[in-house]
Image (cartoon, rainbow, N blue to C red; front, side, top):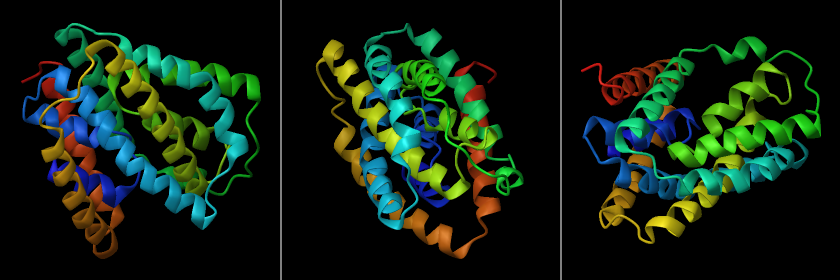
Length: 234
């Protein structure tokens, strides 16, 4: 968890993928994994949302239609209790895709002229992303960011702010949906919170002293390895 938070804080928003990856590597049960990842995501995304909004890297016009569609379905997804083998398979695929994204050269799309997304399309995409975010415990940012960047709906820095707010909203909704069914949080959560806080401090140091390219690749490798473990490759 400590190293997951360190890598996560170094590269920006990969949703809760970093936390889930390290919990998967240490064989944390799915019933603990999802609410823990959502709770930790709320803590980190709250700070990140404030930081990006204060710096001016946020556009409410882009994010609110996605949230309108996603929040109810993140709640529904969070309430769905999948059998462990199905949950591991789905999250494993998500982690592998998240890991591959860490090797994606997003700067290729940075020079394009951005434009606002159609509201109706944002709502529809939000519905699907919201359900997946609640179901997997990832917060949805890992799905939303590539779509926004690829379709030129925001520049790279502002996309980080949009993703942070989106992750925060969906993580809250997904956790509420999960609590509506299980009615409790994992008892190990306070230990994880301390580890994440310390890891975030270390991650900030990594991000300022080491090349972001190598840090992203390191996180990508961790995500892929954890994803392969979850789907039963080893």
